[in-house]
Length: 156
Image (cartoon, rainbow, N blue to C red; front, top):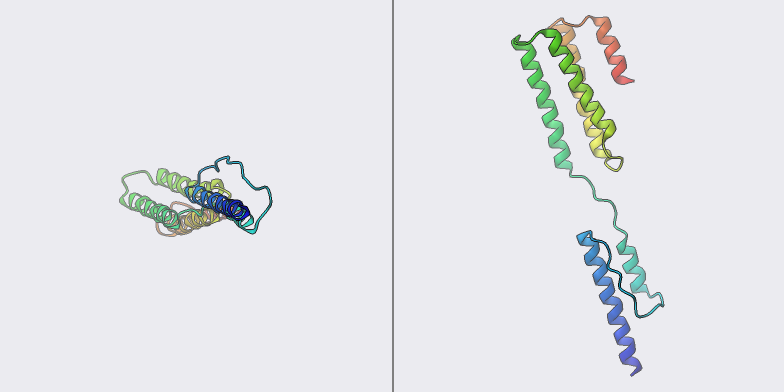
């Protein structure tokens, strides 16, 4: 009879361990099931360790896709500036706001998503640097002193 009670306790412990694993995989809250034996066994300690789930990593492909779309948007702004369909000053303001928006998104990204923060900041830099050079050298819309001030503000 003692073997039967011990076997039932081991089966119960394994069942609780499996339930915790399934709940952790499904990322649902744990059901409140009272345990039969109060003694801590290695199986229960292992199940408790498996219960602590690390935060989910963000989808790297999604972040990279957003960054690529950001760079594509910068190319659209460049095409608009080159076509001359809008006043150049309006395109300058729009381009500066666009690069600033990516920098703002980098600052506002979730704290547990360092890859997203870095990708959005890199996207802002990849947009702002060439855009500032083109507006200063090629389109000659910005004087060099204003470009230097904008670059200093962006870096700060």
